[in-house]
Length: 491
Image (cartoon, rainbow, N blue to C red; front, side):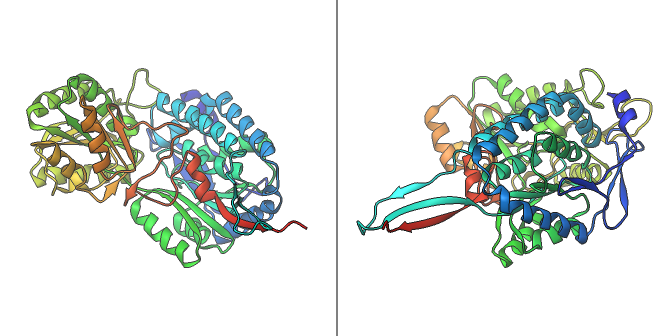
């Protein structure tokens, strides 16, 4: 990996608009640095402005006039080829992803393969747009309902999954006949450069998907507010999602928002704590805890609390922290200094709030020099629901344990946050699992396993974890298409 990165680093990249690579109107670029070695330059990427956004949206709107009428089989064939190309280039994409984001290679390879799976599912969606023939009150008039693509989509992707999240937005848009302007996170733009190349290689017509790289203020704001943009699919912080929703509402554009999470693992008289701990640790510390679906809270009945904590601690001690290219590493650094400072501030806050730090909480030095922002997996106990570390999204390798006296209190603790994305419940009692899945306010419930989702099942949250149609599954149709009622009176 190191040799490949060195050979391919330092290039200057451009935006992808109407099938061409063009420099930003600003003429400026920003340097991207490697996550694990922040002094290493990976490349120079456009510092785009509103004029670049306008060019991209106009190209997407022009392409939409033809793409919306392209047969579903044609749209699907492009996505099938794209999925094949993702798998054929998995190693290169994994290197790029790990370099700019920091996650270990196994996670990066898994992300690329998941993106290919989701692209294939979306390909099938091109021929699954729902319609209906409805009974008519008037026998001389036929009634039917059709679906049609809404137009240009603004796809705004986060930095924690810079391959699968853009694909999760772009692939269904293509399938349903929409066109896209993609804005990646400004700290992880390299992956999306390669995605655009593969889409073009798959035969996607010019202008159907466009890429504009830059900051939220210079690119994101004008993109969201552009009058030709009919839908905004955003994954990121709740605060920014709320602001995007306000802008979209002012022009009646649709939104699909995947926001924050403070997900709990609820352990209720479960007879296999080793397995539960495996699932919890995997879900808590994958991508260094930088996932909206990361488990960040454990709620356990009091009689099992001490045993579970000891098992969690042992498994956390076995996590090998280091850079992506080192063999057997299972957790990488957090992405950059800003995220490092935020996570460390929460760790200090937990101590001040009175929680007991039983493991971790320190910056780790990996190798001879202290370069990457590595944080030791961290475990707090004696946490109550009023503490900020129990309520707020930390987005890092920090896990807190809360004790409940009974199932009712466990449910109450699980709901004691503004977020409602996912929950994992570990129990041997089927009636309890059904009851608790109804009473916990989340968009997704996982019984006796971690928070891993599947590539065809709707994905989303409630409360401040999401708004609009769920993504991934067939529920995407609710966002990318609109409904039209048609009345026909035959001659």
